Each structure stands twice: as C-alpha cells, then as structure tokens.
Length: 110
Image (cartoon, rainbow, N blue to C red; front, side, top):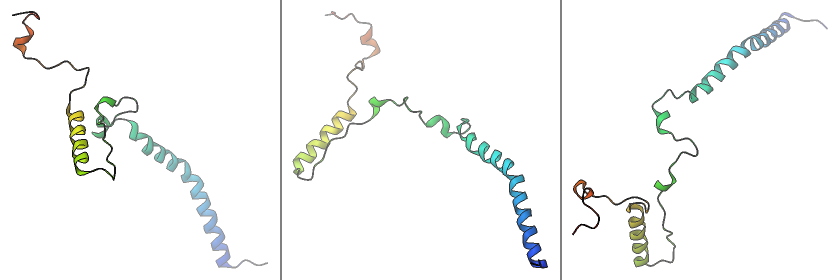
C-alpha cells in the first residue's frame, strides 16, 4: 500500500482538526458555561420583574367564570357581570377605606 500526496494531506488535515478540537474544547466549554450561568446574576432590568416560584401573590389572580356553549345570551351576560364584580371587589380580609377625619371619632359617637 502506497500513500500519495493527496492521501497524506488528508491524514495531516484530519490530525490537525482533531488536535484543534482537543485544544479548544476547554476554553469553549468555559466560555459557554460562563455565558449560561451569567443569566442568574440579577444584572438586568428584567431580573426585578420576574418573580421566583413560591413568591407570587395568589390572591391577585383573577377567578374565571365558566362559559358553556349551551348558555343563553342572558346567562353569558350574567356570568360576565359576576366575574367583573368578583374580580374588582376588595378582598374579604381588607379593611374598608375610611376618611382620616372619621378615624378620630369614637365608635359609639352620636
């Protein structure tokens, strides 16, 4: 078996590519790792806006009304009004808003 110049060039090019891959693998892996892990460093304007799991206020989530295909127009309107009233009403545990002047009056004042 004899090797001509074209075959020797292909072998040398393949060996050079393999050496380059082995040498460049570590720096490329480090750069990729740094790029991916830098997203968790809280460096951008969006980091303040994104909530973490478990910290979202579930009471602010609207409650949806079920609309079914066999509902009449009156039933649909009533369901929409119920949903609007429920989602715009203050929470049950919230204290009613009062004037600053009323706060100084005693409860059993005439």
